[in-house]
Image 1 (cartoon, rainbow, N blue to C red):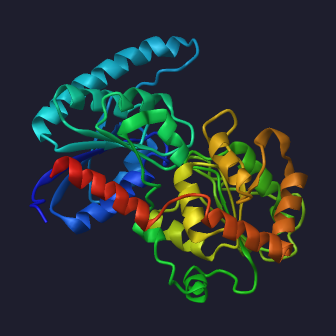
Image 2 (cartoon, rainbow, N blue to C red):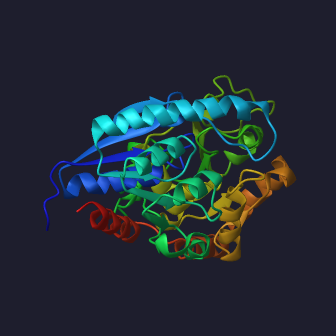
Amino acid sequence: MKNLCNKKIILTGGGTVGSVSPLLAVYDELRLRGDYDFLWIGSRDGLEKEIIARESIDFVGISSGKLRRYFSFQNFIDIFKIFFGFLESIFIIIKGKPDLIMSAGSFVSVPLVWAGWILRVPVLIHQLDARPGLANKLMARVAKKISLTFEKSLNDYGTKAVWTGNPIRKSFLDKNLNVLEIKKELKLNLDLPLILVVGGGTGSKKINEIIISIVPNLIERAEIVHVTGKNRLEKKVSFKVPLKVPFQKYHQYEFLDADLMAKYLFVADLIISRAGMGFLSELAYLKKASIIIPMPNSHQEDNAQILSDHKAALVLHEKEIDKNILYQEIIKILENDDLRHDLEKNIGGAIKCGEEAVNNIIKIIEEIII
């Protein structure tokens, strides 16, 4: 193998956990394969700053703006933010002299990627979702290669594109874990099925409210771990209906780190979540029965549709659900073993992900920078 010493890679993305997860999966593998130096460029106040703080990666925040496809006075303000982010990126690249810039989307990456192109730094873009976003469309024009989660995205990006699948973090790759041991470690009930509810990195107010409203009935049949999202933790949860079983069967968290999330996912019998592709890939790799509630009017609806087409998850639309509908669907899956097993089987084949995807992207990176 050619010398990999002192190769410098800038990883960039943020705003949501979605654009962060695949980059961290690549980072996990690269640091085992060679002597790489990493720098993460994100927004100054985004969720990614907290996530990267838990990793051994240097983080620099830059000015970040968003180009909206509708009229907004904020667009005029954000133009200046993007310009300042571009200037900051120029100085960062000149000082750091990276061998590669890699992004998985988000608007904070756009000025950095374009600055990298001007300074002749190769760029690799990962198209995470089924629907290409505006940020990736802007960056794809100057990218050397574009890796794809879905084969259908080859039509969106042409000859630069490579269908790799979506990488997921090493925390989720070990399928030889012992469910009983993990449940004991996490102090979970050994006799009840576990429902894991994840409303996305920023949380969903409606999903959170519905889940809390049906907890008194749900915990008669299952244990619930509820990840509410950033700044959405309900510290004082009150129930109008008296609980018939111990309240300890409902556990609420604002955020779970990758290792803890992997453990809860591994032992969960049913997942209720948004349709961010990073999280859906983890569900597919672990073959988990799921109820998916995509974010309305977003790329998540396209992601969810792919699962629906493969009969790989039960997809519900937020505008159409209430507590009665969600409760009935949860019970239907919990009580129907055949349905649950079909969902587990089908989601495993719906998304190309895992070690194969990581290796495919690493191969592209080595071809670019060696």
